[in-house]
Length: 240
Image 1 (cartoon, helix red, strand yellow):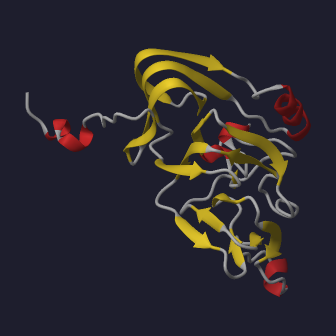
Image 2 (cartoon, helix red, strand yellow; image 1 turned 180 degrees about the vertical axis):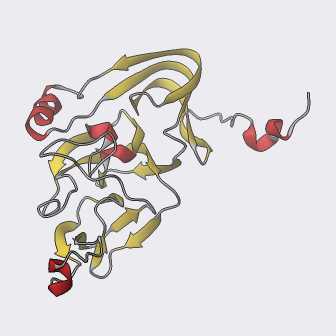
């Protein structure tokens, strides 16, 4: 049987080292020898002796935060030995290596999987969401290990070496040490009062030393206080 479908670029990527790697730009492969954490429902295929265990909100502390904030972390623990393939709506997949001292604040709808060696917590985003439809909470990862994130399209990584402003629904993740706030991007005037709007009322502001990852797509806004749509706001899908 012959077809371009069977070309080398579509064949399973093999490696002698366990862990996460890109199968292609839209799919993550975990060569599993132990355990990893993944977004619920993200598995598209697996080979070998692999078990999946739902973790709910990821512990009592996070369960309580979910009740208080309307946010949660529905994760599954993947254990065993074998190959696991993960994807999310054909979004682009990117792998980030965190080292001791690093901390990443991330839009929960962009989390695909991460090493169980990483720690995470639900935290309020300083100054963001106060006057916009984005959420008030984000997930902060720290420790040593890999995390796989998704973006809708090819992102831009902005180096925050000058005042930086980003649409809250396009912000994917940023250095957790950055100071965040909100900034009125639209000038008030007679046109505003007459209903002429730019659609860019407020943006998130970033200051300090670090980076911000911005995708070329905006997540739907949050509907209701403390509640997220399936993929809306700063926590969206995963943290819902």
